[in-house]
Amino acid sequence: MPSHRVRALSLKKTKLGETDLIVTFLAEDGCQIRAVAKGARKPGSRFGGRVEPFTVVDMLLHTGRTLETISDAEIVTSHAAIREDYDRAQAASVVADFLDKVSVECQTEDRLFALACATLDAMDGAEDDALLALVVAFLLKGMAMHGYRPQFDACAVCGSRAGAGEIRFALELGGPACEACSGAGDEAVWLSGDARAACKALMSAKMAEVAELGVPHGVLAEAFGVMRAFVVYHVPAKLKALGMYSAEVLRATRE
Ligand SMILES: [Zn+2]
Image (cartoon, rainbow, N blue to C red):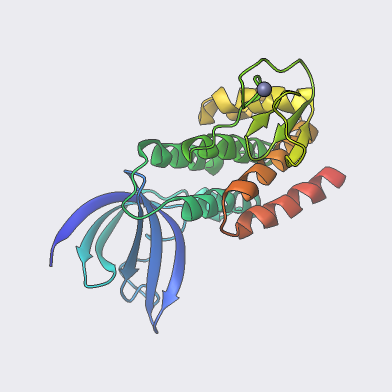
């Protein structure tokens, strides 16, 4: 059987048969890989915690008739502190679920893996109040890599500069539309001047610097709501983790 080595991030595991798992990965080149971990659900399996979601592994894969099989997996980064904390795990699940839904087999996207690792590295040591900022920054950058780069300063159709302060963010266009360009049926959400500035700052910040921006929770919650609507509009698959996280954000905002 042909075999090859690959570095990849575990996104999701699904039960297969009595003792096996199918693990969905994002590979270093941005392609999605689904591979079988044989006997991974048996006690004392050699896979142990190596294919748990959020773990980065170096694997040896064998190509079978239908699915690939993992014959060896070494941990590169375990991100164990994410799995040990409820809030971190909720935030990281949004990242993994998004990557699961937008990545495709044999479709490379060079920057996606680096973004995913930088986001999870930051979440691994993040305080609770930084997690929402990291989720918003990830969704902004992730959507840009997925082909929907959000804009906040210029009309998304003609490029004329938008005024200062609040904008109407058109979901289909991924940005404001000027009066001449906006259609009557455009689905749009309001974005306040503060949340607009926060989105721009999060878009350009490195993941390791996101926590230092110190964006207030209320502003982040608004930016998150707009980004969630933007993601849901353009990603046809149901993002369960995003929905659950949204409920958490709403609850925290009311408190
Ligand atoms: Zn315009």
